[in-house]
Image (cartoon, rainbow, N blue to C red; front, side):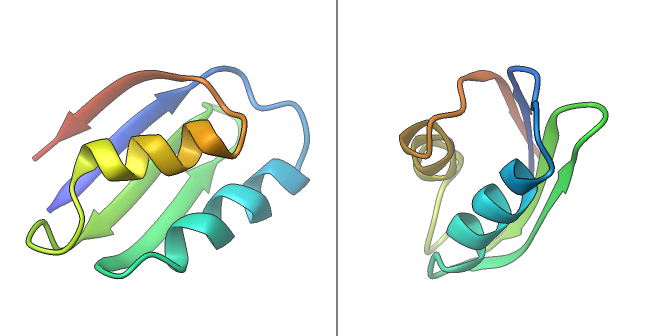
Length: 72
């Protein structure tokens, strides 16, 4: 499953490592990529192990407000 998450504006490049690092540690996340300029996070994951709400929760717990979540 692919989940695209729109966050509030990212302000520093270290945000990328923080978000990607947090998501890539999750069981079931195959790949997480932060697009700094558009403030989007693209996550490839196994829905049987981790769902979009859990991914959203991790991003919010890291201190980044989530504006929109789309899974397909």
